[in-house]
Length: 124
Ligand code: HEC
Image (cartoon, protein in one colour):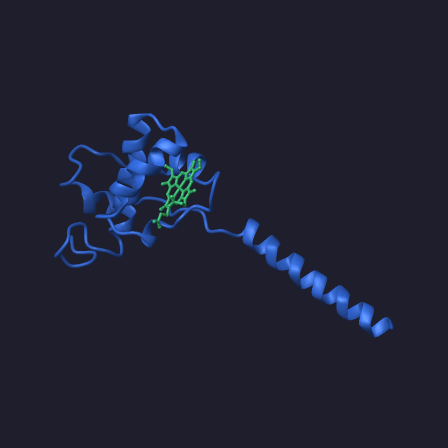
């Protein structure tokens, strides 16, 4: 009997641990760098690193209330603008905040995917 109880206890512990992990350990969105800025400078002339950072802040504070935050790399630079148009309405973002989030996600997703269809991933 005791053995059975211990086994139940272990199973409960494992289940609790699993859900805790899902809540506490989603990765924070990556911090933008000057390399990220360089990759999108021709697309967004005049954009600054501080503005990319603001985009990250808005993304982190406004886009994770209904679902976990998607990593920028989960979609490509050609996909994010379309996705954000839809989600910015749900998050009730101002146009300025929508632009900030879009630039951040486009810039960071360009780390691993081409900025435009047909170009090489990560090409500068
Ligand atoms: C009010 C709730 C809500 C907020 C706030 C919200 N989303 Fe969503 N999001 C959803 C729902 C619901 C889905 C899944 C259903 C769907 O795709 O319509 C979703 C899906 C997504 C997807 C997956 C789409 C796909 O086809 O893979 C992405 C990416 C996304 N959201 C990004 C964002 C971003 C970026 C923001 C902030 C600007 C945001 N979401 C804010 C509710 C929300």
